[in-house]
Length: 107
Image (tube, rainbow, N blue to C red; front, side, top):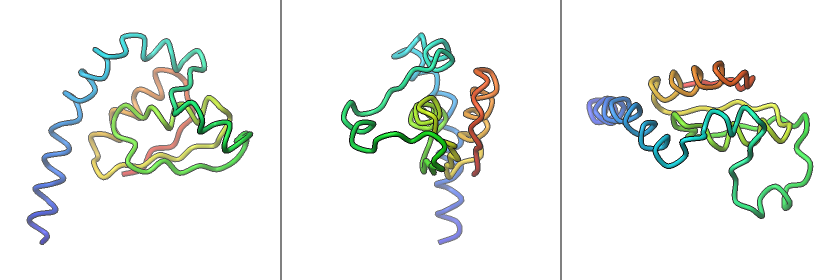
């Protein structure tokens, strides 16, 4: 089982850079969008949950694009985001720093 877990982790790590490139193709304004407070969530979700300012939120499976993590942060939540792969966390952390978004990332 340990060998299968390692293979899975290696595959997900290898995929992250390409996944982010594809994500940028779909949303070329990604950095500008989130830097300027953009929110990309299901349109009903924020209204269902109400005000999240100062609430602690854990985003599981954030992937390298961290769209939900950045969206919740822009709505005022204190966000910790995690993913199974180090590479996803590395890319997302660099993106957060580039956009000056204070989201904590954990693998």
